[in-house]
Length: 381
Ligand SMILES: *Cc1c(COP(=O)(O)O)cnc(C)c1O
Image (cartoon, rainbow, N blue to C red):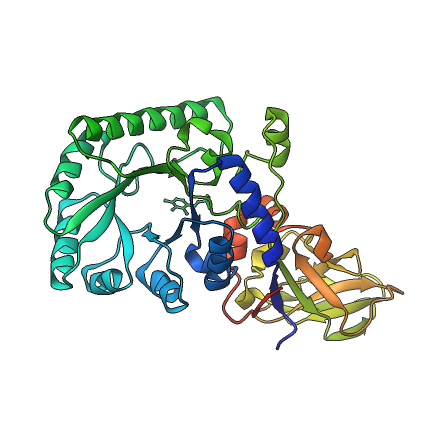
């Protein structure tokens, strides 16, 4: 196995899931394992989630659901994004539960259910302000009736998704509260029409931690299972609020130093020779680059470091597709094949988390971990 690897600490994942469980009581838990569990490995993470009492799993595309079924996972699987007609037989054969709202999509799913001789359970998605998928809250009752009267579909649930529940600004709080109100209106309208809305759910990680009134029958955590706090809903914020939840990053990304070269003053590093040694120094070569998910932009400002034996060393010059170089200085004591930790929990020897990298590079932890590419082996411990 190559030096570069993503260590997936399943014990930490289990602890995070237990922490989530302690917050949500006996509500159902639908763990998001889309995008290969945010880069952590969908099958292994889904199995751990099921062991920890996940009632549902969530994926973004039919092939992701199929992967879980092939691995023998038997729990209900929500399909959070829309698929195309060509995928619908597979959706049904893999017993996925789609989110629905539009008439053409509902009609095609009905045909697919009929073709496959099954009754398909669907959840009605309501767009209360995310502006992505879902019907308007004023349309929910009518569509719920449409589904309830279908010979091939069953209404198993009703859901919405918040646009800004990970923000603590006054404006965003008001926006989320409006979304909750619109969702309550939709659910009540369905009930008034004499239809059971099934499992009512709305909260991904941000709202799960911050909006007790939006937990309904089921919550849909993703990023917090992998150990990152969503947006402004940080550990410190929750501590101040008196609802603290301790999470640890599940993934640590590491590699090994495969060469140590002595550079004399004046020698340059990497494409564009953007960095030149001002004095003699030792340079370590790491077999990791942007094709592994270590983006070029990380090192753009010259302050990106990796940890070796508990000390931070800066990446020098541009990150290449498959390699990058770190400045060890002189007499570092670092030896050939020592481990370099790019990010992870402090227990894994990292000096920064994917969250720290995200903060520094203007993105979110989700993007950092889900961008770790396929050629980086996931090692489950
Ligand atoms: C991705 C997703 C989630 C999980 O979101 P996190 O922020 O990772 O908790 C929940 N619901 C929907 C609809 C999603 O798309």
